[in-house]
Length: 380
Ligand SMILES: Cc1cc2nc3c(=O)[nH]c(=O)nc-3n(C[C@H](O)[C@H](O)[C@H](O)COP(=O)(O)OP(=O)(O)OC[C@H]3O[C@@H](n4cnc5c(N)ncnc54)[C@H](O)[C@@H]3O)c2cc1C
Image 1 (tube, helix red, strand yellow):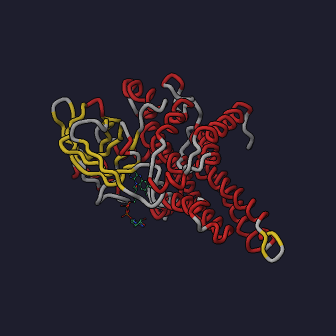
Image 2: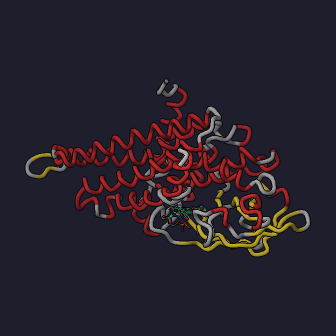
Image 3: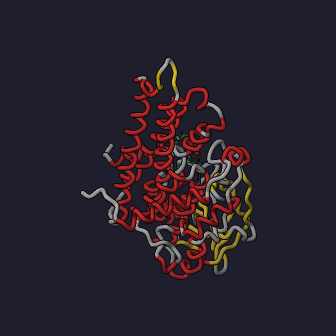
């Protein structure tokens, strides 16, 4: 077992870090308050090729294997504190770019991937509905065959990137009586007649725009279908392995950043005549943060390695998502406690880190759903 990165990977990671520091830093207190998306940052990421990290160069991507991809995303999370911007990047990558790459036709890839990889198009995923959250396959959005295409009708209640997206993967049913076997996925351009987006407000990841999306007699051509009719459950399951396995790569970088900030503070801040890091209770929190970071990293790398090897990783992806999200939240809580009153002040940025982290226990399937899944894979 070799845990080292090669020279090329190290060079790329260092370029990603330098890029993030130079091009993605901004006043996050204000951006968070206003919920503003860093469009310029997204375009800069596009020039670097980050929105197409795992996509072959022939389609405009950087051609990285999954392990190198998560390594880059981890460095990005370490060097860029805009968790919202990076969440938008993850939503784009795992719910649109990778499904297109793995399941799209040559024509679909040629049409969409070059612009999606180069920052000239943003993707989002429209699955969740008011009555279909964890029970995702209970969705009610319908697709009806009409002419040489389909008519979509329905409402999606939580779509990351929707207000800024150019294309959405939309899950709809051709026949609700068929259950999961009726679900079909469509690539829908947000400018299509019948699509409307209403931005929504949220507690964290505020720099990642989110919206509700409605489809009212929205006609899409047959070649907008991703995969076969009724293949929605398959597309979802395939995408979820990538998504759950990789979506918290930047969170691992964020955990490292928050740990370093907290260690620095614990060494500087003196009370009762000595640095607070000398008090066992403070040191124990920092040790727990370090332990979580290392376990999170191992899970992340192992799942990405399985993906690189094209081996099944369904169980590992669920474990990775569940563990890292809980670890990220706990780490932010510890960091706030180590910083005392300063940790509670908005300008320190830790309240934002915690609010951003909390979302990760809910998206990509809540942690309760991951728990059910892991239990069933254990044979329970
Ligand atoms: C930041 C963020 C980004 C998101 N982005 C997107 C997106 O881009 N596209 C999209 O389609 N959706 C998105 N979602 C929605 C997300 O997928 C859903 O919120 C999630 O699947 C849960 O659905 P729900 O909110 O309806 O909660 P519910 O399913 O109603 O769950 C409520 C509570 O009950 C628990 N629960 C439900 N069923 C079970 C069960 N069987 N066993 C145990 N506990 C259970 C849940 O774990 C949860 O704690 C996003 C959510 C967040 C927070």
